[in-house]
Image (tube, rainbow, N blue to C red; front, side, top):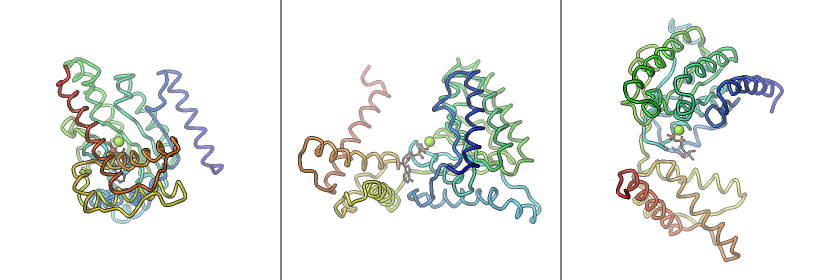
Length: 308
Ligand SMILES: Nc1ncnc2c1ncn2[C@@H]1O[C@H](COP(=O)(O)OP(=O)(O)O)[C@@H](O)[C@H]1O
Ligand SMILES: [Mg+2]
């Protein structure tokens, strides 16, 4: 870590320490990193979403251009789509491309722990972020701001309105800080208060859909290459994508990554039992797909109460 980055990290650690003194452990609920190190090339498919995020990054990279054309840049965007489709990756890629600090606020975890006091934490983060220079504040699981999961409905509505009101005020106050970009993410866009996405606030709405066809193939390749780079050797036989792609249709990028991981884990277990573990084959991947689908079916059954 460079000297300057180290100094930033020190200040951020002090700041988080101060919050923890008041609210208890926040590890895993807020993370701040000088650069998350995610390149757009590591995100498969999502051409449209990536293009829109790249567009937003110019607000951080070349703010003067906006002045030359007589406008102020957008404050930020709402990313929406199913779980595991790459919303967090996109937010991290934006921060990486812009050379910005990344402030990751996991609002489901935060609100579950400290409820309405989340407003104070968000305010604190914005305060630090405006002082630190370029930054991307990521309001992850933004639907949790409805507080439906922590309070009875009437009370949730009332307290959530205050929380959103405070947040909107903060967003409006950010107009003078062109070096900050705010991204929110959700898989329940219906639960997002319209005030947050009004013009001049998070007014770019970016869909992050499930991958299809070529995108699925790209995601498998990204995770194959990553494992091979880490291992420093080839780990896969040439794959038969005509056989694989139909079987992973409908899966999220996160699930596809998990299929690749499980296929490799099978090899680890063979090697651990001192059995021959050849390279990962198409068949290994298909078996991993089946195993993951079984897990998914069980999760669904539990969710829909068929085990009660
Ligand atoms: N488009 C993608 N390309 C490559 N990997 C992906 C993609 N989408 C998801 N993944 C994998 O799934 C994991 C979870 O993705 P994430 O961005 O956290 O999803 P979300 O925030 O939408 O729930 C990532 O860390 C990555 O390993
Ligand atoms: Mg996420």
